[in-house]
Amino acid sequence: MSESPPLSGPDLAQGVPYSSLSDGRMLLGHAQGEPVLIVRQGAEVFAIGAVCTHYSGPLSEGLLVGDTVRCPWHHACFSLRTGAPVRPPALNPVACWAVERKADTVRVTGKRTAARAPAVGADIGTIAIVGAGAAGEVAAETLRREGFHGSITLIGAEPVGPVDRPNLSKDYLAGNAPEEWIPLRDADFYLTQEIELITGVAVTAIPAGDRDLLLSDGRRIEWDRLLLATWADPVRLTIPGAERIRY
Image (cartoon, rainbow, N blue to C red; front, side, top):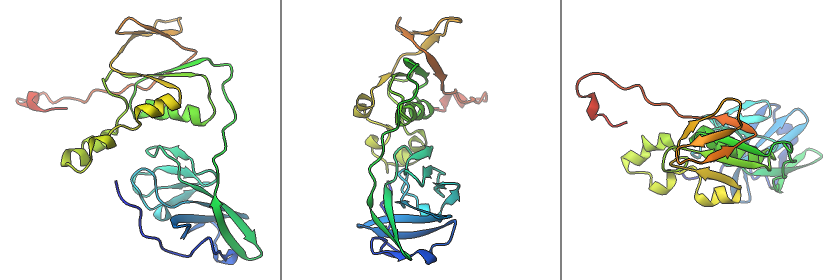
């Protein structure tokens, strides 16, 4: 993974003139030893961490869209209001900083504590997600982050949990990425988030009219809501020698 860039710009803890903040523009600075991005939109001023949590891209070089900022490298998207990742590939939030304005001076005063999302989906007992790739994993995380407290079951046919597939074809093959970088989340994460992860078991049938799944090991999984996030097989060449290609 890339390291954080060196600190640059003004010390936002000391403050900057409000009049120096252009509406709809970003200013890169720092506070408490960390890069911070400060943004004015109309009468509101936001401050979030300036480094993308995916591959440490510089958010100050990204794009403002509404109340979000998008990383210039892989287009991860973060909320200016909360720092939450609102679009993949980033999974973790950036820090959200409190901003104080006195007269013409704007200061970053410290990190905000993430607010707990209000409970949603109280009438839904179980959500089953078929497919334990990045899409299924992000769906499960988002449900928890958005306040769903019911049961979540994530089912994948592969023997391992969700992994960073692009990294498998890049840094990992080049020997620059250790194996611990490859899983999107470790086992403790799923335990903490109360997400049941079932791996190495395929879904063999989704009976019409029933609200359950049939698994290849004989189990049945009941659901109130179902998300299909299955992966696809690559299109394989049919030329001589293609059988030697490893997919």
